[in-house]
Amino acid sequence: MARGISLRNMKNKIIIASGVIILSTLGVVLFSIYQSKQIERELGIARPEVRPAEQPEPGNKLVPARPEDYGMVVIDARASDLTQKDWDTLLSRKIAELKSKVTPEDKDKINGVIKEDPRKTEEKLKKIDAEIQKCEEKLKDDPANPEIREKRQRLMMLKSIGREFP
Image 1 (cartoon, helix red, strand yellow):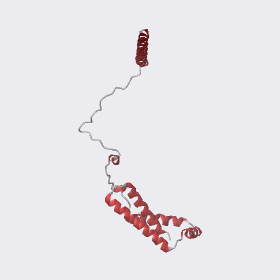
Image 2 (image 1 turned 90 degrees about the vertical axis):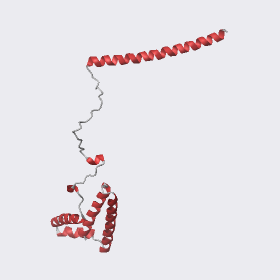
Image 3 (image 1 turned 90 degrees about the horizontal axis):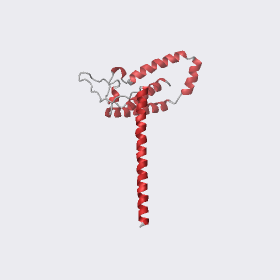
Image 4 (image 1 turned 60 degrees about the horizontal axis):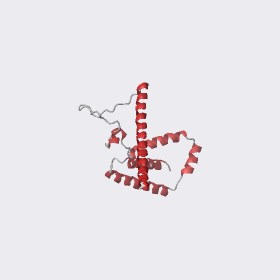
């Protein structure tokens, strides 16, 4: 019997000790919250108020700075892609301008370095044409795809450069 009473006393003491620890922890947390609010008041630190989101007035319309970010397809005539004829004209002018600045000796050196068999050059130009056609077909399905548009533009530049040099 004495033994049964001591086990109950032990269990009660453990429960009481656990309760005291939990209550003291809760008291310390509440006291620290109280102290932090006191310090905020003394220093004049104000917490921002949480307000509900304001609805825009019906008359005001939002205009995105970059419509592409909102999934809109933007067609701008000024920023349209150049055609093969445009690239040919632009690059032929630039290359002619650069050739005029180079001395005849340097021209011979450059032509010696870049000289290639005409058949090989034609094969490369045919490959470029085939890649441009592939890009055109892909653009029919997805005309707003920027990666394909850029690739097509680079291929057109390369084709123009290939025509200008021997």
